[in-house]
Length: 204
Image 1 (tube, rainbow, N blue to C red):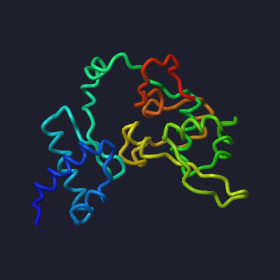
Image 2 (image 1 turned 180 degrees about the vertical axis):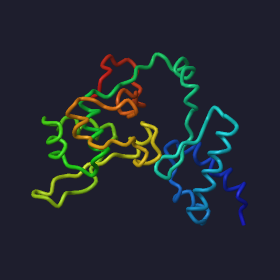
Image 3 (image 1 turned 90 degrees about the vertical axis):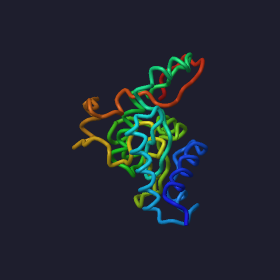
């Protein structure tokens, strides 16, 4: 029987070569073990890396795990990787993304009813950036498309699950007042869309 130490060692190698967040169930199948046991092994690894204050840490994204650099080291990574320009989401994109995050699953019509303006282009841009995706169809008239956030959204905004979003009692009033609370990281966060040599720093 493979020891826990050996399994954790393999999990480290898998995360290193996989790049994207590694699904716990997929990793568990490789050893034919219970996914909950595999999840505990990943969490143990995560705690070990954090305890040792390693330059690389393990981040959880919706019951998947991934190696990432320690946030405190970002300044030095930026120095190494310059010149790199980062794209930021426009205010319109932030508003639509916030509505979808808090109201999901939701339709384009519901989003436009809150914002009071069309949002076709903004939704297309967010889908292209893989921050939102179609998650089904509404049972309403015409069965419009339902939209929800993705694992890419969780990863870029630093959330483990959608439940980690800060509490907002009334997202409609927040949008109408054109104000996003200070504790909501959707405000001016810079995403992992690093573009070399581009002058436009705004994503609609």
